[in-house]
Amino acid sequence: MTVELSIIPCLSDNYAYLLHDTVSATTTLIDVPEAKPVLDALQAAQYSLDTILLTHHHDDHIAGVAEVVAATGAKVIGAAADRHRLPPLDQAVTPALSFTLGAAEIEVEVIDVPGHTVGHVAYYLPAQGLLFTGDSLMAWGCGRLFEGTPEQMFDSLSRLAALPDEVLVCSGHEYTLSNGRFALSLEPENADLLARMADTQDSRDNGDPTVPSSLGLEKATNPFLRSTSAELRKTLGLDASATNLAVFAAARAAKDRF
Ligand code: ZN
Ligand code: FE
Image (tube, rainbow, N blue to C red; front, side):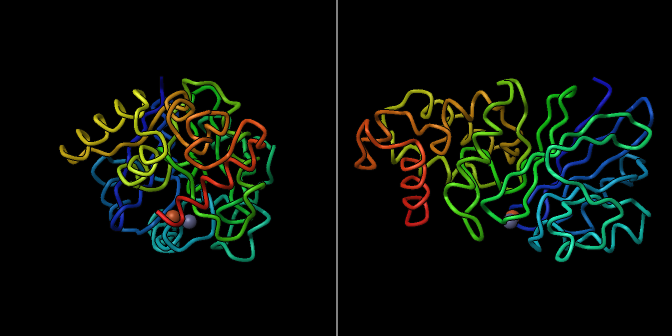
C-alpha cells in the first residue's frame, strides 16, 4: 500500500486521521476536532497538508478547521447538504459521487449516512480498503440519533455493512470500551463479544487506540449490525416476527438508557 494512515488523538476521546500517499506526497486529513495535535503530527512527519475531508458539522469534528487551513492552505471538502453549517468548503460533495484526492489519484466514494446528523457522510477508499465513518458506524457501536430517525441510521449502517469485510472502519471516537459493555449486556455469553472485550481492554490498558476495526469484526460483534441475532432479539423482548429495523430501533433506545 502506498498510503500511510496515522491516527491523531484529539480532545478527550476524538480521533482525526491523516492519510499520506507516498507516491505523490499528498496528505489528507479527515475531521479536525482541534488544530494543535494535527499541526504537531504534520510537523513531526514533515507532511504538507493538501486536503481536509469533513464527515459532519458537529463542533468536535470541525473546531480546528480554520486554524489548520490558515497554517497549511489545505482545501476543505464536505457535504453539499450541510454547506450552511460546515466551515467554508472549497468543494461540496454529494452522496454516491466519487472524487480523487488531488495529485494522489486516490478514489474516494461519498456515502450518505444520515442518522447522527442529517447531512453526515462517510468517505470510502475502495482501492485502499479504508472507510472514514465519523459518528455513523463507530467501533462496536453507532452514533446517537441527534437529528435523524432510526430508519435513516438503519439504512445508513446497511449501506456500510454491504462493503467488504476487510475494510478498515476509521471512526471518530474512542468509545469502544463502553460500547462493548453495552453489547455484552445484550449478549453476555457471545464468545466473539467476549474475545473482542479482552482485546479492547488490552489496547486501552496499553494506551492504544481501538480504531480502526475491520468491518467483518463489526458485523460479527456490533449490536447495531446484528438485528438478526436471536439472542439479541430475546434480550430486547422481540421475537422472530420483529423487523430488523424494529430490532435496531430497540437496541439504539436501550443504548440511550444504558
Ligand atoms: Zn457528532
Ligand atoms: Fe463526535
